[in-house]
Picture 1 (cartoon, rainbow, N blue to C red):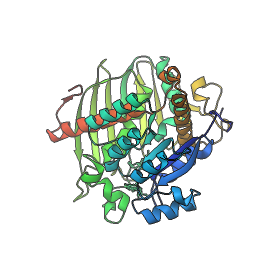
Picture 2 (cartoon, rainbow, N blue to C red; picture 1 turned 180 degrees about the vertical axis):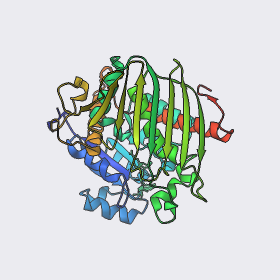
Picture 3 (cartoon, helix red, strand yellow; picture 1 turned 120 degrees about the vertical axis):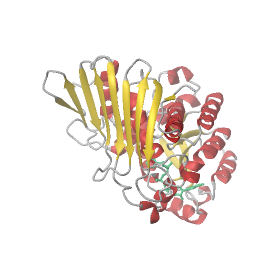
Picture 4 (cartoon, rainbow, N blue to C red; picture 1 turned 60 degrees about the horizontal axis):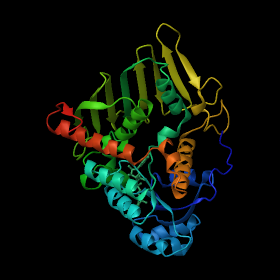
Length: 390
Ligand code: NAD
């Protein structure tokens, strides 16, 4: 159970790039990082507009002299200080992730980066290699995977409660982009601009979350080949707002992934159903405290967060006990707590500990980039099967 007692000796001195006033995701980064006092927000280059970024930084309690006009200046100036930053979170639009992450690693900083990690699989590999070489922690904010019932699902699959896995159905299909929202919304505009969003809109924006959830719960499944059809239903939209993907796994299991922004009436619609030869489980991010468990031939049951019948791994990050609602902020806090523990271990050169310690990392981010690349390849060639290894 988490009760706020410290888990590392000294809080990590931390900065943010992006996530400024009006951004969608900045606040949950700060709220989750600082919640258990494992990170101290001491600096930032919060905004593409330096003045607005400085004013914002001061308003959230950062010293004016440590609110920088851009990340390059921040890395240079912080390196001169004895109490300079040790880690940085990157919450800027997709097109900047690669160059900022690379510069941060070169500056010797631990990195937490938003998904999708970057545009190209080669860039992702380079970031992965660089983090390994520099022995730095590189986390990726697949923010839904800190939910305790996701950990329960993972354990149930690992312990064979479902039998051999046959089918994984993944989806993140909301209705929020059923009209040209990009016309009046800056965050939506860059998401559908290939120069800033990369080769995909909805697959990168939400499909990567669905994929990682499947990979985390079923780590034994390796993609052998995939087929993707993608389209934009909204006229004039440059990148796809809907995609269906069929997956062949190496051991004969099959998967489907549906990513959509035009699923009218659906708020988020991120669901995963894992079907084994004996039983199935189903989890939905809009009801994160519950996990359906359906054994063939028995009445279906709904497992609840924070209860004694769960596996220990699903109880470690409980903060209040069963029956109370925990949500996305708790899930993110659990992940940030893990990022801090990993960074602390790396700072102490405890690499043995890091070998078995789970957090969504740069390799997981890189697999998301490869997935997008392969989906685009398949769809552009007329929705053909593509070999995943090539
Ligand atoms: P946004 O457009 O709402 O905000 C982007 C912020 O970054 C703004 O404050 C902007 O001023 C700032 N910025 C842009 N370029 C910058 C630069 N070069 N230096 C410093 N600041 C800069 O975007 P958003 O919706 O918050 O998304 C940001 C990232 O987070 C994207 O990669 C997106 O895919 C990701 N995201 C992840 C989740 C999740 O669940 N993990 C959810 C939403 C968004």
